[in-house]
Length: 410
Image 1 (tube, rainbow, N blue to C red):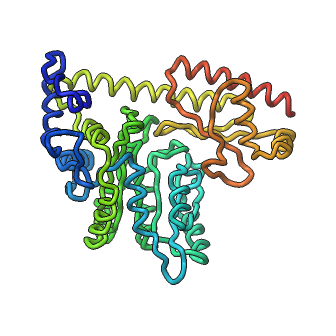
Image 2 (image 1 turned 90 degrees about the vertical axis):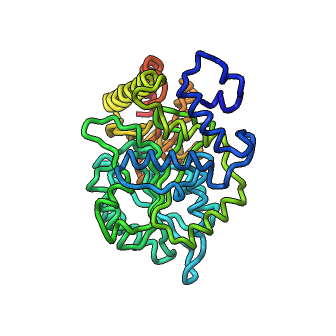
Image 3 (image 1 turned 60 degrees about the vertical axis):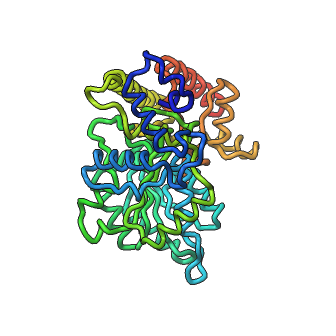
């Protein structure tokens, strides 16, 4: 589809299925001048916004209004645009945003850029990185002394922790957000990536709707991207936000503010259309699409199990089940001598370990320091994305390195 919309002669290629050509024609018809080289509306191409709303309706079984859909350059574009609405001070206090610890650094960086206050709440590692309501309450009560909490960010499935929230946990979070009058940011970009038996993705919108009033009237935005899932087209930069129950005046200001950025890339918008408007049963492309999608997600499931199982078999590591997303976030126990060597090198212990691993094996991990972690604990994020044979080789190298590392610093 992306080839067709960028190079018209491909429409004459008989090897390209007719349903792909029909999708491409629909996208081009929605573009000014029939070309993806033109600007689109700031909120995105209308037909693609309609397809996003239809996708959400199929997923949740409840209505979605395409006029509440905003297309963006990846989910991060719309996350930043909506966060910017909350920048104003209240009673001479900076606005605060609750974010999980560990968290995806987009949030901490944007909060700092907007001169807001980050309100960290710790995920419970002992409960598969679940959200504990008492911890949320502790965090917000402390934050109210210096800031005005305005919003809460939930990443489900989790990055970097790989957890999938239960429906009951989501209901608790919604009740907490209602009590504290918080705008909900539901980061759901990994919604297709569910692996563990018994785990299931529940959208915040659907749960909120099923809870009825007053919760179904709460303000919220949910986010999706073409960078994750089974697609992995992170460089194309396609994403969307659905804003729910937003005050019309505030929504008007949101649309006005994003108009200053002209429009998200039209190729990224078209990629998002391929995600939300996939081939349907009976169409020429359906069987191949289903085969490829299933193969990718099944392979990721195998790799998720392999990573957690391997780390749990290595001395000094504990790793929760990778229930979803694309990452594991193991905890490692470092010898005191290693901690002292890190201090001497002017590095955090997990950073020291990561550099030693990189220099010895070429394996690159991200230290837990970059995501946040409870004081006195050390973690790192590693991905499950390498192909199975390469992943197994990497894990074998990792095991050998760690054994030598322990021997050196014991």
